[in-house]
Image (cartoon, rainbow, N blue to C red; front, side, top):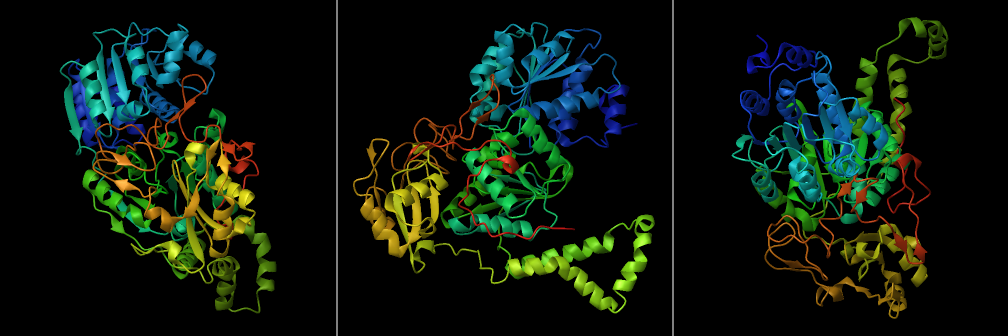
Amino acid sequence: MNKFEALGLDNAIVRAVTELGFESPTPIQEKTIPALLNADTDLVALAQTGTGKTAGFGLPLISKIDFTSRDTQALIMCPTRELCMQITRDLQNYTKYINGAHIVAIYGGASIDNQTRDIKRGAQIVVATPGRMVDMIDRRRVNLSSVKVAVLDEADEMLNMGFKEDLDTILSQTPEEKNTWLFSATMPDEVLRISKNYMENPVEITAGVKNQGNDNIEHIYYVVQARDKYAALKRIADSNPDIFAIVFCRTRIETQEIAESLIKDGYGADSLHGDLSQAQRDQVMKRYRSRSLQMLVATDVAARGIDVNDVTHVINYNLPDEIENYTHRSGRTARAGKKGVSICIINMKEVGKIRIIERIIKKKFIQGTIPTGFEACEKQLFSLVSKIHNVEVNEAAIEAYMPKIYDELKDLSKEDIIKRFVSTEFNRFLDYYKNAPDLNASVGRERSSQPGITKLFINLGEMDSLDRNSLREYISEVSGVDLNSITNVEVKGSFSFVEVKSEVAEIITGTFKNQRYNNRSVRIESRGNKETGEGRTRDRGRGSYGGGERRSFGGNRGGYGGGDRRGSYGEKKSYGNSDRADRGERRDREYGDKKKSYSGEKSFSKGSASGGGDRKSNFSREKRPRKQF
C-alpha cells in the first residue's frame, strides 16, 4: 500500500501525488493529514519552510470538498502573490484526477474582472492574498457564506505585513461554524493571539522546534568591511561555479542596484521586488526557475512563496530586522530533505547579532573565510574542466567539421590542445583576480584607520529619502569635491557614515557648516568627534537584536528583541521592507517609494534589473569575464 494511501487519502489523490514523485509523507504531513481527515477541528500547525506544509493542509482539504457543487467551500489566505500562485498550482496538481475541481487564485497585480469570472464559474477552493480579497468583498464579487474551512498559511508573515485588519474583515464574511487551520513556520506571540481569536480548542501540531532552522542547512557568516560587501558577494559566487542562489537585501532600491551591478559585472542575475508589475515578476521567476539566472536578488516579502527546487545558497547581503525572517530566508534552500547553505555577509559590528540568531534558531554558525583570488580561479578552472569532461558530444552534427579541426590542430600535442583550450576561458579569470585583495576583516579593526581615509558622520539618511548614490552625489555637488574622492557611503535611517579621501575631508566639513536640506540644518563632521558627542549610538536594555529600548539619533528601533516594537525610525516598521503587493495596485511600505534628491524629485528606474534606467551604482564596476561555457 502507498504510504499516502495508508494515511486515509482517496485513490485519486494518491495517484496524483505519486505521479508528482511523493514517496513518503514528511513529518508535518504524517501528523496533519490523519488529524484533519478524521475530525472537523481547528488546527494550529508549526513547521519549518520547505517541509511540505502545502500538502499537509491541501490533501486533507481536497478530501473534504464536494466537487459536484459550485459553491466556494474553502478559502486559503497567504501573504504574497508568488505563494498564492504556488499553492494554486500545487492544489491543481493534487486534483488532477478529480472531475469538476476548480481552484482559483485571487491576488493583486492581475485583472480583477478575470478573477471575478473565474469565481463565478464555480470555484470550490479560492486561494487569495488579503488585500485583493478585501477588494473582492468590497465590490461584492465573492460569496464566502458556504466556506467550511479557512486556511491561514504563513500566518506570521501576514501579521508582520500588517494584514490583521484585512484578515478580520475576510473571516467575518465566513460562517462561524467553519474550521480554521493555521500554518506557520514560526510562532511569535501575534500568531498565538490570532489562534485564540479565530479558533476554538484547536489541535496543536509541531514538526520541529519553535523558530528552529532546518537541520539540513549549513549556516556560515563572513566578516568584511562595509565597503567590501559587494566584492565579497562576487567572490563567493565565483568560488561556487554552480551557484543557484537567492540574495536577500533590505530595500527595493538596494535590490535593484545590486542586481544591476551583478549584471554589468557578467553574472546571470535579476531582481524581484514590489515595484515590478505582475508580468515582470512572472518573467523573472520563469528565468530563475529555468536556471537562466545564477542569482535572484530579492526583498524579504517578494521572495516569500518562492518554491524553487535545488536552490544551493541563500545569501543574506543584509541581516533581516526580524529574526523570523532569517528562518524564512534560509528556508528557501534545503527543501524536500536536500542540503543547502545560508550565508550572512556582515561587518565587524554585527557579529553579536549572529550570536543572537544562533541562540534563537538553535543552530551554530561557522565563521567562513572569503576565498582568495587564487582559490576562486582554481574553482572556476576545475569547474570548466569538469564541464568539458562531461559534455555530451553530438557526433552527427560535429562530424562534418572534424577534418578541418584536425588539420588546424595537427601540429599540437594533446597536452598543448588541452592547455590552450582551457586557457581560452581561464585567462580572463586570471586577469580578473590578479592582485585581488584579501576581503576578510578582523573584528575590531576599523576601516577608517587606513592611511588616507577619513570617516565622516552626516545627519541625513533614509528618512530624508536618500540612498547611497543620491547622498554621495549631494555631498559632491555641495562641496565641489570629485565623486571619486567619496570612497564609501553607509546609509542608515536618520544618519549616515561617509568615507572620503583625507585630503578632501576638511573641504567637505567646511562647506557644510551652513548647509540646509529640506529646511533643516545639515551637520557633517569627523566620526571621531561624533563618537564622544550626542551622535554616539547608545544601547540600553531591549532594542534591535536585544530587547528593550534603543535610542539611536532619535526614534525607537524595534528589532530582534521583543516587548513594544515600534518599528525603525519612528512610524516605519522593521526596515520598511513590507512589500504589500495587494489591495488594488499595492501598498508598499519599503523605503524609497518616492525618492527625493537634493535638487528635487529624483526618478528611479523601475522594472527588472536588466531593463532599468541609466542609474549608476556605487558598486565596483570592474568587469567580470562572462562565461562562455
